[in-house]
Image (cartoon, rainbow, N blue to C red; front, side, top):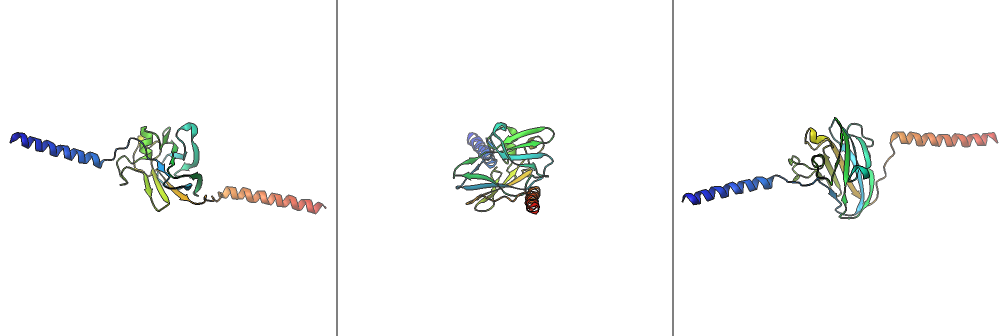
Length: 202
């Protein structure tokens, strides 16, 4: 009788422990975005709260990193959607970031180091997405809830840098920044002035 009661208690403890383990998401690697269908992928900065300064882009290491956005989150280089390119269904997009805050560091969506796991996954499932930082917001848009590459030294709140992904049938046409418009307009004015001077000399 005593033996069967001990077995029942041990079984109950085992089941309780198993339930707790299954409830906590275990991620061996960071979260990566896989194209659900083919199309043009664009990225857009949509918010975030962090003291660090982050550059966000594509890559799997510092050697092949391609910057798309810089100065995040407080002085973004652009607020417009930026075309990344055309990708077929099933292609994994490798994102990366470089952050300066009490030093500097890298994080990549394909890596397993602590900086990358904190930046590209939700270790404590605070977002309620099963440990993922990728939130689908419509049929063709998603938001990445990222911590920056130095966040593992401070916190894990999944809101340092928010990036909106969109897949469209045509590439987005990024509107030039105000400074670019000024350069274009001043260039046009210079061409117009030179043309006018030529005709006035005749």
